[in-house]
Length: 311
Image (cartoon, rainbow, N blue to C red; front, side):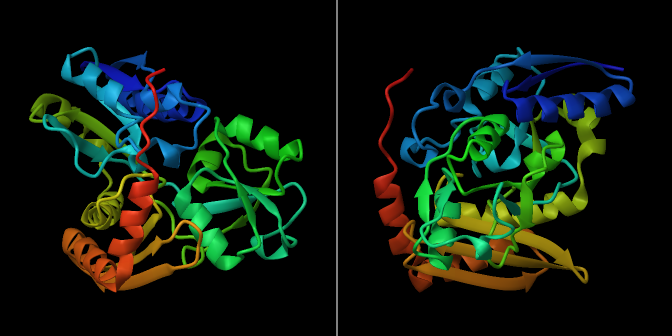
């Protein structure tokens, strides 16, 4: 029917995601081409993400290609997309969601609870670090960058007692051998949008939007809209200590949210039900700010704004 050019990062997981969308589009008789685009986040590999402090670090260059007409759509992990897109772009579809939870991976231990005193855990996420420290202040948290294979290899080599990863990425790549525990959202609240893919297009491109309409999943759109509304209310990007997890229960949205001090000394949790995704996300966000989230986030932002030199 149409020739569609997809822009994607070149990581193993990003390529799986782009090829997954390509296959679905080809089933609808579209001719699909894939363009690999290197982003700022891909170039900075030796700095913990929380220290970079740039929103859109995994999306900016792809959006530039989209704006200039080199590609027609971009496939992103939704958690990498800033809650406020730059002018000229829109999310045409949010795909059916994979498991949004985090998982505990280890070669030696069966669960978070079984880890010994002072266990060395790998993660570069302040959100995960804060919730781990709140659970067990004795944990020794170390940065962990690289693609999924690199992270798992470091775990198998004994550099860490355990690492925390997103269930969705491991499920998609079929690399679940070292998954020992799916961590409940009440213990480790996931990142907003985790497990969902966001398909970004030029704003107002009704032809491309119509081609992609079949990819939009109503439940994924509602739950991630709620989570992203909370994140937006808190002014957060993907590398601040904020968690948001929404699910549909008995026809209503249920939202679990967390704002935490990176060292885990203060963790604010809030949960609520509602029917309007944006209203629910914003109201829970406002409650967290009033309960002290504002002070926690000001400190976190102040510690993570060091801009790296352009590589």
